View 1 (cartoon, rainbow, N blue to C red):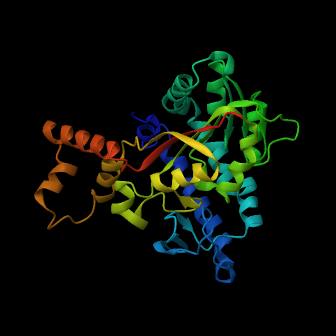
View 2 (view 1 turned 135 degrees about the vertical axis):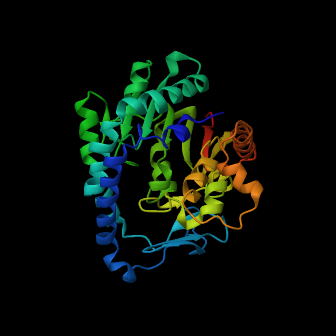
Length: 339
């Protein structure tokens, strides 16, 4: 299945270049402030299995990512204190700017290119209209929620950034300012779907956060997640040079570790894919302006030739990578057991 997020996230329509650069500047300033006391932070244990502190995997100062020797999760270690991270996600200048400006300016395109197709996917997963209720964690300014409501879903969201949550509420959407702590007035078993689009990589404690929201998922309901794939082709080849190996990515799952996450949550995996379409395009973008002297001619041609046959081969290679569960973006769907 082609994932529209993978295609659209690479376009200026989704991340307008001028405002995205301003976001990056604000983010660099926030990271410098966050990491000024990093030498005092203890190493944490793996947030998935708690079996150890992990072995060095990627380093992009001041960030260090380690890979758990037991479960293979890649995670940021050391991590800023939880209270500091919570404040960052709630009120930091870069996080607020990303929601107020980057997401707001691209909201219409995101809804058309990203979320309308995902609403269609959820409609296939929940074919009975009467059962279509969803909770979107990390809902940002509510663009996906708006698409869901338009499509007839009963929808609510959780969002830690205060400014983003207010924008969503001002638009008439039902959003609480939290992730992992729904309002006490919400009843258990309320939602047929809980979605998390590009969220679990940013959760301070992904297991605990998802455990906190799962009581609100109906029996036989679905948890639907998308996230980068640490074992994807683009991450294997680019490593620490990959744009996403940066704050606030706190962990990177793989097909193996996403399956383990679902197991920890006592969910049954129904669908696990890497439907990414951007691995080769991201490699092309990264290597376009570097010295490629000595490259094998076949590799040079595959990535950079603009002949019709080369473009067709890139498409076929990307499709093969996706079929092999080896592209850089994952979709996971898991079901809660009937009681």
